[in-house]
Length: 404
Image 1 (cartoon, helix red, strand yellow):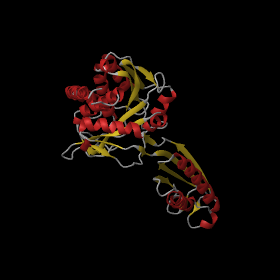
Image 2: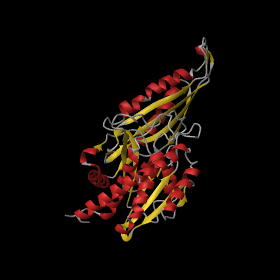
Image 3: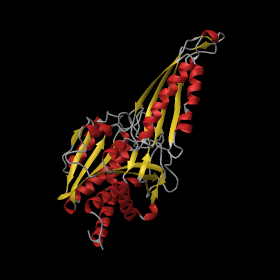
Image 4: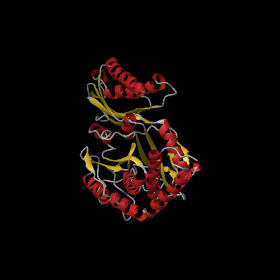
């Protein structure tokens, strides 16, 4: 594509995204007011399907509540997949806004309403541009990002990365740490794997005044929680980020009652799949061995969660270049590694991928509340920006590098 054509296309995408702003606002307000929990996104999927059909597309269901559609450009080009998640969280919304959730105890507190809105906007722009690109755009509206086993894994199992097979997958996610108008990305390892830990320490309960007759599971559990940290501090390579955290401990005794067992829940996260497996082995050995040495039994269940999210360096470099053209180089930020987890990681393990972050904080500091909080919201200027940017990135990936 000639440089003049690139400039013309860039202007056209920006203008169309700006013109779509009122429509995107209405879509986001509808989605935000009608959130649905993971794998229950029936009304959301129906709404998305209706929107896609209105564009002349032919959507179909994948993984029950997932929705997929193809935008066919001119023949002969690659396939680029675009992903947005649709599910909400079990959080009671506290913000007093006209589009507040009407579903009690359910809220779009992680911005998935934004992701879905932006992808619908990008789809509209790309559908209107399909005479001007070669290849296919595969739209992936995904269920269940917030709940294991993750909707991405189920969509992949159902064959969403085949027929046609994408050459790459792009995804974006709201990021209140960045102001609207900026995005953040990072090549290589970006987000962590996540595993859920469930421990049951079994001893022998009794009167707190007669410990010699009991096997105290509280003491065993306390030792386990402390000792387990040496897996991170002494077993892990210091250059490899790892987190082991325990967030729930139930010892249902009393001031003078030693319980029979203690129940513990936690999480283990890292950025290396080989070390992840090794850490699991160390944790099992520690739990079983330490408990046995104190006369107790420890049962450990590890529910394997999402893998590490790895941004393909070549794809991410191209996304950076295209984003700099759309936003300005000063508005494309290099991110640190982050030990949160995202099931987009399954796509990144299966195909070259780039997962980037969309700034949503207002320039005056409003809308800075973290995701997964009951007051999370965005500067809605991010909607047209996010839709236009995703469309532009896709067009650049389909068109190939510009020439002078």
